[in-house]
Length: 86
Image 1: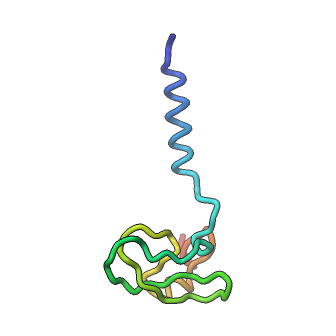
Image 2: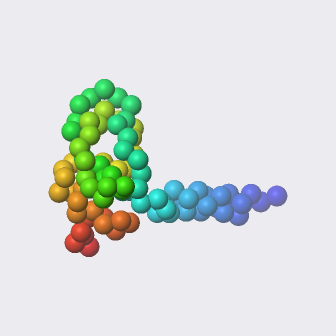
């Protein structure tokens, strides 16, 4: 039995799964401080208030709802990236 076609299909499926854009918008993810103990003051978007708020990020883990500045957070467009990004 030739396993090459099955292996090729499996490879393409795995690549597709890991490169497909995530369906949850970055700004809708809950604020997550991360698991480590570093101290980094970052910003996250609070979807219920529609505002960007500061939080202390631990340096590892967490999720994509974190920005290095309030301006970066406020300029983010859902599923598109920063305003004006091409």
